[in-house]
Image 1 (cartoon, chains in turn red, orange):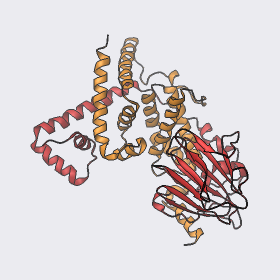
Image 2 (tube, rainbow over the protein chains, first blue to last red):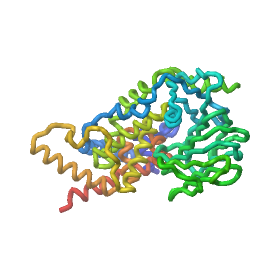
Image 3 (cartoon, each protein chain N blue to C red):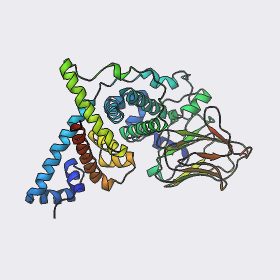
Image 4 (cartoon, helix red, strand yellow):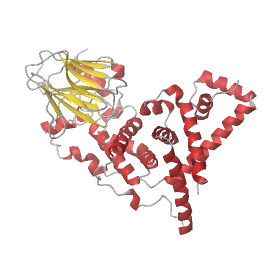
Length: 239
Length: 186
């Protein structure tokens, strides 16, 4: 019995675990056919990857001004407080430091340099959030309506779902297919960013679907702003 | 654990990296991965201007993100691929960003006219072979050529890690077959 294509490729690329690699190499040492196949595969790959180099151009270099410009006009010496609410299922969560919240920062005119998040002034507005790369249909579930508050939903090219709480901390809990927002009694606002090319995502408030993004488009009664955001009124007006 | 202590724990780990200025971290990521991501997109698209635009945009988004993902190269290439696929699907051109156009720079080397002619022929053959592959095969093959691990390939392309080797072997055979065809085409 010879090594299959998957195993040969994995030997070639060092992608077998120790035990399987040892077993494969033992076989290779006694099987000239597989040994020759591996060597041929190695040479063919080297040739192929070498050919690709003929297509290459010099990288033009980044325009750093353009990269850093979005925040350049907003550096005012203020500090946006940032805190993480109770974030569960930490293995699949990514807590967002404050300086990631550019759009919010743009609106408030404040900034928090990375690494200073622990300097949270008492009484300042806080921001919490999480980021998840969904692999399957995903839900963001708000416990219910609020007396006031807005959810802003934006479609992006990034691969992750991001949920941010703008205001008083709210507990966020994440599972493999959903984020639950314990927002009862809160007056916070929320920002949700969804990968446009990712799996379907539904936003529910109190069990009612208020926004659904599928691969073919968006379904919601919420108005869309000129900048392309959807604004869901958590007090229930217009949604 | 109080909110404050949890905050500090999350923000301080994994340590030194988070305590340094974010622009500095982004520049380190740039130094380590920019050339590879540009090269990947250039090979994938056959359009160095588009590759430059998308690479630029991916770094803009990384900067806006404000915190490095665990695997910045994988994150960047995933964002870049999404941008590229959007570009392909809309068949439109993204507004040009303020970058120097790669096409103005010419190929990496500075060969003689005869060598340039040969080089163009070779490029046309390789491009022709790549274009005969499915987009998925091209993405996979070219990512592997940049040294991405099987795990990264599976995550970026949304395929099962257990079958990456088989898919790679298939993609390489497909390229070789296509290259043969192009080479012997009249």
